[in-house]
Image: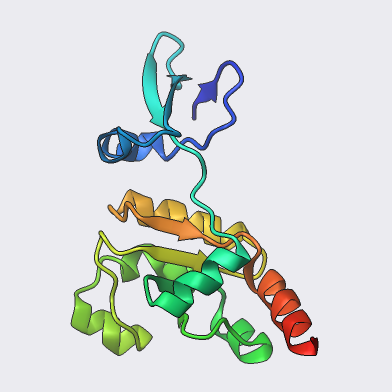
Length: 170
């Protein structure tokens, strides 16, 4: 859909959905924000788009956020994966294919469907999955519907289990 020319080691948010302009307004004063030319499908159409570093959270940061109750943690794996392998304590299971619609629900419907408090667009949300692929897609879906403080845990369940079991062995 678009090509980025030059070296840009930053994340471009879904330009086609118009969220990049909103992102720029929200993060304008963020020190890690930069501008990059984006060439859309039309060769003559070039626009400067605000870009920001990926919003990721490490294992240690996630542990601290969970402890402080500062986040809504959403696991985007399928229910059978949760049953078979387990989940990070306190997480809400919303399969990836349902994330965008779930975040558009009214709070009562969200609570009934997912057994957890619905986050507001200003809440800090962390998405998790098995190994970071689906959580990144969920992050993009959340950004497209106005969730400006969404993060993702790229290590996912695999990294969580590795650290948790190694801590318990000590």
